[in-house]
Length: 126
Image (tube, rainbow, N blue to C red; front, side, top):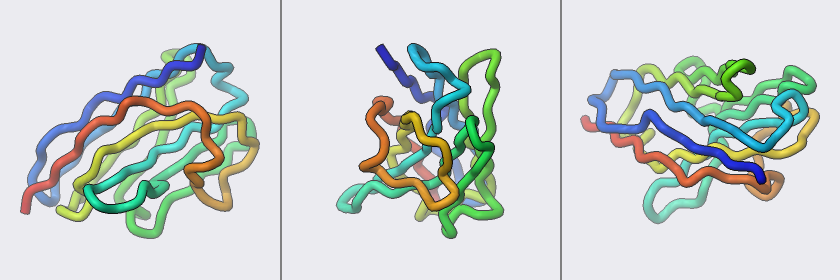
């Protein structure tokens, strides 16, 4: 059974940083893509950043390019999302997701991912 557990969310002032973690179990880490998505109240879930270890491809939404960085620790089966220069509009519940995707260069699409974590709240105050 695939399980994903997010952590690292919290309250931070604008301009600050947070690092989210997604601990994965029950998957072959090398074959799966991991995606970070977020959903703000009243808005649709959007793909923030995705990484496919099988192909080495990475995707970032335009809204986070240059500020967010996705990385992995294979030994720990954990994927991180380093978020710098946070803005109030980054406030959302952040989810990690997993799926057997070879490439994510075209984007992070919610419907492509079967396995989801429970989410972690990120609040950025102005």
